Image (cartoon, rainbow, N blue to C red; front, side, top):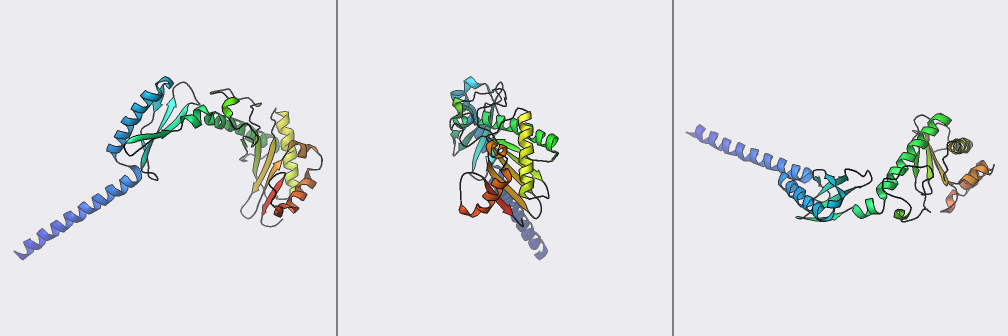
Length: 258
């Protein structure tokens, strides 16, 4: 009788433990990926929201993804006909709270990102082929002095052109063991020549060389600096004045020995 009673208690304890484990797993899962019912409600609400506000865009919607940081859900919407028309829609606490259409589509953030990405691929290829740095991570960004409202100078789905009106700046990033300013000047001059030969005109140049124990970064170099014939001296002056906190002109940052 006592053994049967102990077995019964053991089964009860095992059942409670299993219940707690399953409950804990569900709690953890919900905390990171949400729950199916909430996701279904989010999908339904966002579909209704799109039909009411963006029916003219002919959008395709992804399934709702849970954002464990906010506790809400996010759905990505993409146009079937426009590569630059894509944005996120957010759902939380039983309703759609906002979307990114204004910033990403109307204000042309997607268009700008696509154009700079395409330009980056071209710049990266030129640095690889003309300068011999095949594994470089060179990239192009819009210039700081470019128009703040890209909706005035860009159009959705516009074809890439090297004369894109965004005051493009290029950052040349290579893997090298030579962190000397002489090497920086040489790379920038050769890159500038190669870019011009390929119809690429940048308003500013940056340089970054990295390794396990040292790196050097240079920003704010203009085409006029490169073409002046005194680039090396300008770099040396900038490094000597690196502690002055200047926020314009050439700036040199260095890690480890010179």
